[in-house]
Length: 452
Image 1 (cartoon, rainbow, N blue to C red):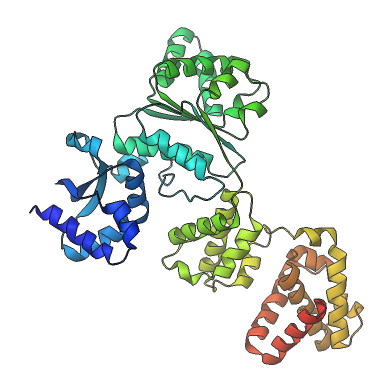
Image 2 (cartoon, rainbow, N blue to C red):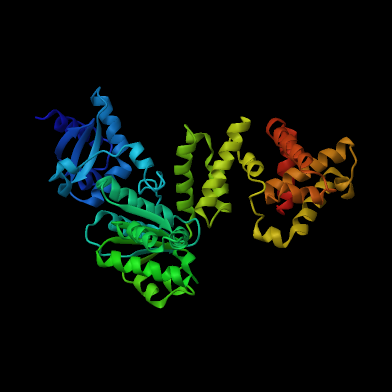
């Protein structure tokens, strides 16, 4: 028996012990043929693209770990389809350098795209476009609000196609870049020569990826040129993928015949992610940011997920800022530090926005009553121990329960500055953790404010 096939079978035997039998049979029962071993890769043939995708997305890392334990070499598995195996000389390994030379973001692949109810149909449609030789969805028109993953899916299509055929001419552009390109090529004396160069750039594309097509609205001349490029490529059966922040029917000041062409293929939308998807996105992002993602409590991800609900870019950005803040200052990954790190980015809750004075007055009243001092003392400049401690507790209770900004808190407590409010929060937070009496004060106040 060939050594590579033997290693594959031994790896499968070890994996079978960890998987449900039905899952194992569904994915690996027909993956029993090794095509070749080359450049430290063992090429394994799988029956179809869906199984290939699932194995690559969920099991490649585990399979390679098992392989590493069985063999002292640097061998890894690479999965290919039966059709590709017929011409094995065309199957190649894509290096990092080759990926970085592409006009696509290296991290925007299908493997790195987290799916949920809001984007599953768009994801599956993009996969279908990437893996099929028949241009049944041409163009693929992906639309949705800013920051939901349209560009990620579009570039993932490009990466997948290039991974399987490095010679494919994938051209990525934004509608704005297309417009500027056209202007540059027609604004010099060599008009005819330049416009031919412009046409060649786009007409030679095997796959044309165009981002933010809504930018062409109102630009009649550029729309005419894009229409010509579209007609040429579609007539040659070359794949076109387009993204937009709205559906074709919502595009204004766009040529009717151009919008009609956009509807020739398939339109798919990406909706706002639900909470399970937002949590999965944060967990995946965390695995890239930290060596040990479990250092960050799940409660932290819950808070970030609850505040950044409509934009994946903002969601990931908030997590990145929080992690960077904690790592840079060498402070723990705590819930309290979420509010400090993201203070200027966390919006107040809707009911708090509508009733700022209400919850401030309630907390001040309860704290003053509990410590038996006038409410005015909480806002005064007094440095006496009792009103100072009560003021700091009131500030901590407000931040813990309602999360107003530090600036707003300062304004409500005698126009105190950001540093003073932050100091109060840090001091009471430390006491709550280390002093049982202070913790008791805090718990009693929270119950009284909640009317318990």
